[in-house]
Length: 315
Ligand code: BYC
Image (cartoon, rainbow, N blue to C red; front, top):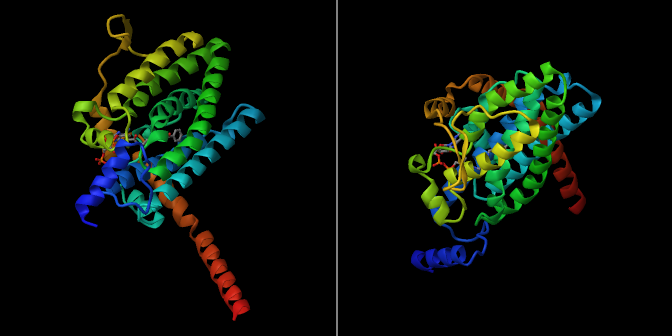
């Protein structure tokens, strides 16, 4: 078949909402875009375990500790499904992890901020997981089959994460003055970084147009950010707390909330490796990988031994 015919079959599938599967022909740029996005997403889940893991030993009760451990474990699981989805595009997990550890691969900017109080576990659940869900629910309809299917389970778990975060903040908001203050301080610190998670404005986003044409992305960065702001502006009222944006105001004409200017200089600084915790996060991942070398060696030796044994049994 000529490349031209293959491309037509590919584009027809996109138009007809038929999933692209690993063995189907696909444009090289489609494959590269997916590897970039899925591996960045996988790295985000794995690095994203660090800020919350910081609070497991200091959770205020056994129930909170068990819930937080389960949430952090879910994130490890999400990372693994996503690495597996990316591997179907002909890249190895070792290569992806090598890119992360060499500082060549990106992961979500949000995980380069520190977790300073217990309330941060609430704000991460409510805002960070909330932003993640807003972005990820449409990815369940992504044109690439393995990514879309991985996202279905991930979204179910993220929605539980979001609720547990909101419930932590709700409890603090009904607590002592000090607890309310801690919750408000945490929202003040996490709000702007959370809305930066959606990426640059549409006119500064080099990948959005092509990714939307290929139905990898279903909504633009700004569309999803606006939806998220509209939801949070209402939910914060239930907490009796506020979002740190003086310009946040319902606009009847647009049927959306208006909001203040995002600090894009801060965003690009963090994306480019100069956020408050970038170096610490990467060092923690590299150390974990090196400390785990013996586990990988033992698992490979065991697999070799089993293979040799079954070959001997067949012979
Ligand atoms: N942080 O053209 P654009 C989670 C980069 S984890 C860092 O708009 P695209 C969770 C972008 O990669 C949540 N970099 O790109 C885990 C591109 O760089 P390159 C993670 C960012 O791909 C634990 C450049 O900026 N979610 O849920 O069309 C606990 C231009 O951007 C960011 C995902 O990964 C950022 N925030 O759109 C709790 C979802 N934004 O590659 C929660 C999957 C942009 O050209 N990813 N960049 O050098 C996506 O949906 C899209 O990749 C994005 C960006 C919307 C993030």
